Image 1 (cartoon, rainbow, N blue to C red):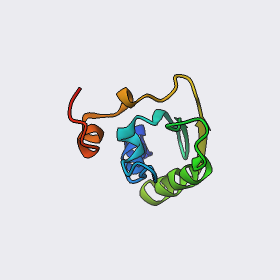
Image 2 (image 1 turned 90 degrees about the horizontal axis):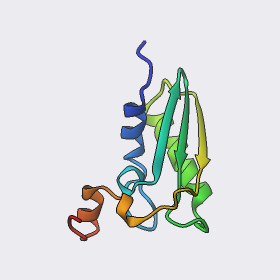
Image 3 (image 1 turned 120 degrees about the vertical axis):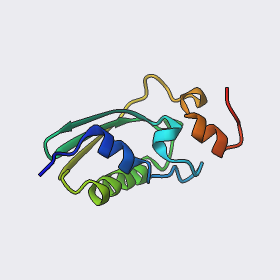
Image 4 (image 1 turned 60 degrees about the vertical axis):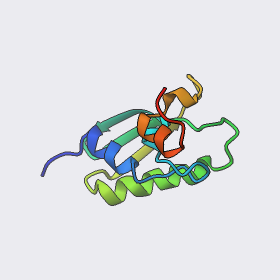
Length: 104
C-alpha cells in the first residue's frame, strides 16, 4: 500500500470551497502547511479573517475531504494560525481569475 503524500492531501483540499467566496481553500492561499506522517495528516491553515464564524465548519469540511479522497489517512489534525495574516495576494492566479481580478 502506498502512503499518502502532501500532494494527495493538497489535491483533496481543492474540493473544499470557502463557503463565502466560492473558491477552494488551496487556491485562496488558506493552507499554509501540510505534514503527512503515515496515516496522520496535519494541516496548518488560516481563515480570511480571524473572526470568521465558519472556522469550525471549514475544519469539518477539510477533515471530510481528506477522509473521502485520501483513505490512507486516518487521523487529521487541523491547526489554525493567524501569522502571517491572510492577504488577497496569497491567492493563486486561478483564484484571481475565478473572482474576476485577473493577474497581478
